[in-house]
Image (cartoon, rainbow, N blue to C red; front, side, top):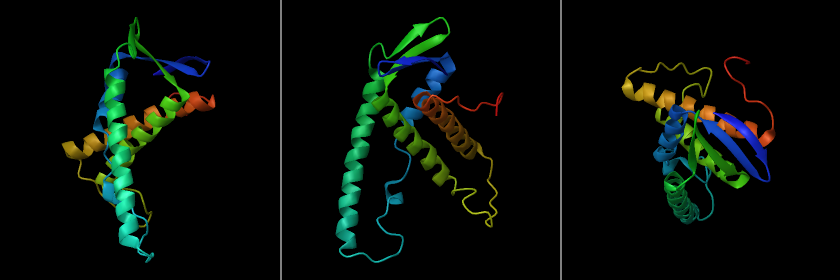
Length: 166
């Protein structure tokens, strides 16, 4: 995936066929982060905590449902991904990129949580069982990070790190 040009509030990206399929596949996974992950308090008693947590849960559920509708609309939008000799080109405005970053980050963090949050603490040694599910979640995390870096690079104007120039 590479940024072809930006200007006038639009960013044009080129994706080869596998990158387009990978991005669409990641977006279809949304939401991954469990709703229970979002807590008002980590053990500290708050006034009317149960009511406040219920309100937060309802708000997050509504937000996730709207994001899911937007994901499906984006994926099904005619002309969103235009065929080109190198694969596909897609235009996104700044707001869409910021929204895509939130959705992709949910997929990345949700996958990390499903793996037991490896690396969260230095003192905690964790061995991952490299079965098909674990490898899939690790690949999902890495692919999500790749697209996050590409989109952030486009927004900031700074080149994304790659294996070739890291």
